[in-house]
Length: 465
Image (cartoon, rainbow, N blue to C red):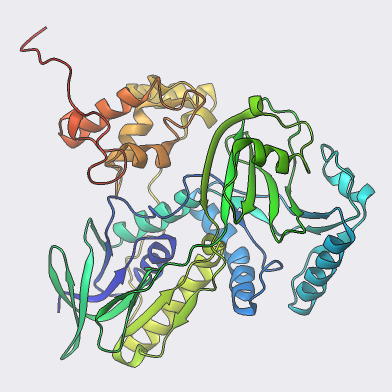
């Protein structure tokens, strides 16, 4: 038997499951088809931690509420950026007020605490820069923001340090029932295992365990605007405006000191249309305030946890959900408990529940910076001027467990190339560091995936300088 457990998919749920299971005496591997783990997560450095009040599905609400309680402890333990900011859903029409009342009544029935209906005066006391007229607001003290990729990476790094093997750039082709478990075939290998956990949203396996690619549902899109740091109408908490068109706009602070705007729409929007819609909560917003613009799918499906084949050793988690980051801690613990009870395995005595230390140079005091530079001079060389990212941080992001191997991998781990210059100053330096650390030619360094080379060729070769 090659492995006790094979986890299919290296998203945040797969990484969280790997971490929870790594606490036990099990031989575990995670298979991910991309160059990096959690490649499906948005590149936005800030994700919302929901409290379950907004979810229409009771199971998703319960998982969100449980995840909301668990995630702060996990973030603190693994030094993942996390902050409770609260959220405020505002209503500007009678129809929207009616919707808020329904959400509030449903939240109370579900036992969700610290959620209140408030009037305009109280809402503007909580958010001084809220300048639009409102009829009522629903305020939750539970809502938080977290760095989603840091969370997934923390789970994966600790799991890797505790023996989980991460098989990147492998695609699952087929699963067959074997005498004692399963045979999993990838584009590179064949493995035997006792248990399979399928966390790949778009891949399902029938009772004969042949691959059936289910058509991926395309939901509404979220259009994001990341505003300049000097934008004045910042907010203290997440502000959501419920639109009568069944969409919404939200504004939230981020970990990079900027402000993030998102507009949900089922039609394609131009920048002018996004700004016009955003003016319903930010009347002073204009094009000159926008630093970045990008979009992502807004998945409203429920996650389906299928344990019907657990007696045969197969569990699947299918579907997409906007609160995936929030529910990951609760869902991974549920999966772990089910498998541990089924396999009757024991806890590891040498489990290390700690992430390797790392440094965010821009967040340190001058004294701390000088101490680190004495130990490693590369922390004194700033590569990304916009976000104050040092060479030492980039090198560390490559050398860590599951280290960066692409430009996007460095960007997600450190924030380099994600500043006002959009990488025009530092991307060549990042490529140079990657090529040296990975012992590759600079023309072989890719942006994110196979074939996405950043440099097509050198202009001229020199034998010497």
